Length: 136
Image 1 (tube, helix red, strand yellow):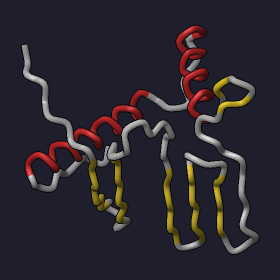
Image 2: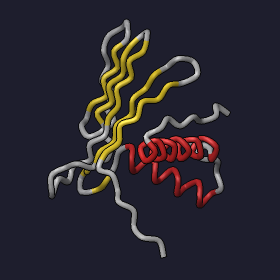
Image 3: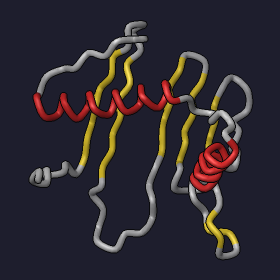
Image 4: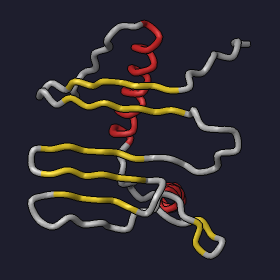
């Protein structure tokens, strides 16, 4: 039997793409005991605009050359005692595809790339070295 691995409390990764784009990713489980709120978010800074996603609140703010918009995108709200929002919709979509045989919105190849990226980040953190991934 394998011994349990010590888990890290947080990760910070800097990604450099072949086209010169640089991205940073951060994940952390460092929260006070009893903290029940999911915190999730993203910030995208692009040449023609910026997108801020606050998955733990009710806001998505899109800033482009036009007016700033705030689409409603709660990650996992509780509405009338029932879970709803993006997380629930993702799970319902997956279960529907399993039941009906429909093609999921996210392909197996796309999911594999995500797992490869996460595995590369863990290997880099463990080894202290950069890890290159193919662009196929």
